[in-house]
Amino acid sequence: MRWAWASALLALAVAGTAVPAAPGDRLGHFKELARQYAEAPDPPVDDPLLAELFGVVDDEVIENLRTGGLFASVAFIQERLEAFSDEWGGAAFKLTAPSGGTTDALMLGLFTLTRGEPRGSLRIYGRSDGTGSLLAAVTREGSVEVRAWPDRNGAPQFLASWLGPATGRRSRALHLELWRQRAGGGAGRVWSSGDAFPEGLPAIDFAAKAGQILVRYEVHYPGWKPGCAGETEQEDVYYYLTLMNENYPHPAMPAGAEEGIVKGMYLLNDGGKAKGPRVQLLGSGTILREVIAAAELLKQDFNVTADIWSVTSFNELRRDGLSADRWNLLHPTKPPRKTYVEACLDGHAGPVVASTDYMRAFADQVRGYIPRRYITLGTDGFGRSDYRIKLRRFFEVNRDYVVVAALKALADEGEIKAEKVDEAIKKYGLDPERPDPWTV
Image 1 (cartoon, rainbow, N blue to C red):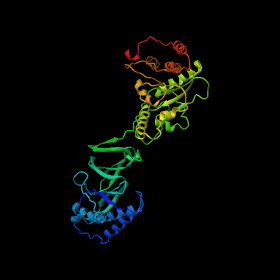
Image 2 (cartoon, rainbow, N blue to C red):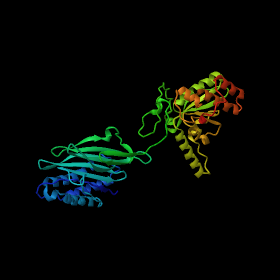
Image 3 (tube, rainbow, N blue to C red):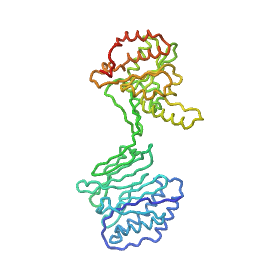
Image 4 (cartoon, one colour):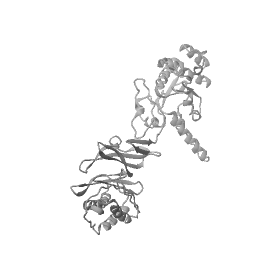
């Protein structure tokens, strides 16, 4: 299998006059190692053979660095390294300094090997007391690059980056390290993104300029509205979370709810086996608490059983529905694929009522995927400032209105008499003649 050197970046400050005589068998040794490595089955980043390959290149660079003079110049080392690349398929090497000039007493080598996912090695060479040496080496998965970075107290700095394997739909694992030249020709790593993100930042791309790092993330946007603590468990992807400033005790996460939390909804509480009418109540975010209370009122005051669903993302449910629609469109002769929300509600009888603290359109976006009577409650109207309890009653999304909506749906289904709905309206002191909330 063919391997190629994708890039090499070197920066050099030179001194001295001696003429080197590189061992004649160094290129031959390198060629044999390259052949072995190319034939190895998916070698890891820390493969000893890869380290030995880099070691041969290190020997060539260090020998030239020790001798100095013309033979330690950028042009000479460029030519020597091109001879090595010729032994490995003729890939090109590029020599330059991170700042466009030179860095005192340091030479940087960036070597990227491609075979499936690339692997890049940052090699930092230096001259101390007239001798050359390898000061540091970092090898990671991904293409390696360096960028100039503003000096710190007169000390040159550079930013090394590796853009590695895919971590999501479009993102890749990004590793960043800031290095600083030290007095006497040494170099040290002063910061690494790996301290906070050992597996790498999931990034589509990034830019570094004037001391700032701008990372473009792939945002997986499920539009989560967690109503319980268990709905915010850590995962190595980025999510937008709608956070509320209402403090309340969180119910425990039901066993096996992990998949539903990510997909958009899960059964928080099964009403159990019971005779009589039954409804499915959907709550999102903090309004979930009102839905839980509504289920208790339905059972206590009207002997109606309710299953309670926590909807962490109507957006994700909508995306799943669109995906099912497309699959069914393009596979007309195959059994239609069910949406996730349909699969959840299978086996759970009764009309569905959803209450959120967003506009009704938010929960309405899954109406086409709920093949039964579906009522949505939301905060349509102008923004207002008041106590939560009053706002939820004003916008008709609180427990009383959830009960009334559930009873009305059951009445429309012929499960109960319409008089029961009127009874609830009077019992909870609701005004049937008040203006629509969105007109006030």
